Length: 494
Ligand code: NAP
Image 1 (cartoon, rainbow, N blue to C red):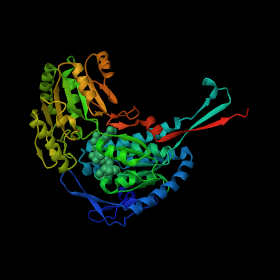
Image 2: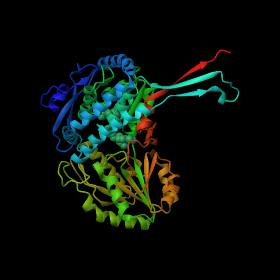
Image 3: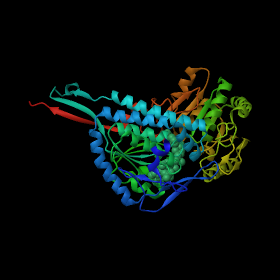
């Protein structure tokens, strides 16, 4: 029963106040300070998270340090079993967790369920993949001037204590994508969930704990980034920070963290470049899906479309024809709603609306959408946009896509490469060879040919350049990022 499994997480008051996990048990903070979480769908209260104190954070760090040493000494085959069990628990509670997630962050039930199932599959894949991680031996005489006098034994070991910070938009999946590789590689994890989405994320953490992650190896500290973020990221007990969130937050964390290993997934702001020979039906469908799924609140959402005048004109006609069939804004729990529910909060919706307004003021035109009711922003297409306008300069984390007309492909490549962001880009063309030629000129993490940007499949490398990230994710790569090399050199007596 989910009620029993998750019983210790909250005090069961109305609204429930969720506890933090100190390494041993779910407890109430001495701070007495809480933050209420409201559903973006109807503003109802989902629950409250506590703001932990500095003293409590210090105690968590001590618990992590002791726990880490024991956890790393636990045989890998046991760590693997625990991860598989956590994945099984998540699958077992799919309906319960999806319902909670849908309510807390305004995802449709379909999107919420796919996040839960993908999370369980991801944890299993990590647990399988970790068993193929190998050390190596190196001989010294390969390098000029050396004889066979040295042998290098190169092992992979844990960093120590990893601080994991997840965002609101995939609070379950992007928590698991941090916890599983860090734990499998033998680290202790101090987990700071997002505030919105934090209740779902704490439920995920419980699956790991109930599966057998032992004392101190996993702790969960709650509180807003502004309340506890600086103290956490600059804490000397932390060896590595794995973070997903906004580029501004990432930059602020990097400045405060000091000499810690940083693995960051930050803002996207992804372009789609449409070549004249593109299949317009496919391109329109991918752009609509890419721009408006989960109301555009995905780091891999398409934010702007580039093409020559005739290409953009025909694309726009096809998009407008397909929109009524593919997009319907509404309550994400309703089966009639397609792609666009609310954005995460009324404040976020107001911000999106102000970016649309500023872009229009700067000379852009609204093709469709542009209005807002509470947290619901209409799916919006802007034309006559230039790269320096707010809707392209900033990452608009909502259902807004801008059309930029270019004179040729070279200009489009220049615009994409001049962006401060560099997560992914799409190129649409029926000539895959031409797509590859363009792809090789783009300074972004990944180029998708004839598809919208996306993270999956989760074992592919996933990375951002410039303000979009540091390091590489994707199952094998994340396991590597969550560990370091430890060379031991045997010097033979001469
Ligand atoms: P956010 O506002 O930057 O928050 C992300 C996380 O950082 C939250 O847990 C937040 O806590 C915490 N945080 C905020 N200030 C902090 C500080 N000073 N120190 C430490 N932690 C702090 O981002 P978001 O709005 O949740 O997520 C959306 C952003 O994430 C978008 O920009 C999106 O593109 C990006 N994203 C990127 C990827 C990727 O793979 N590249 C994937 C998903 C999302 P609170 O919630 O308590 O403020």
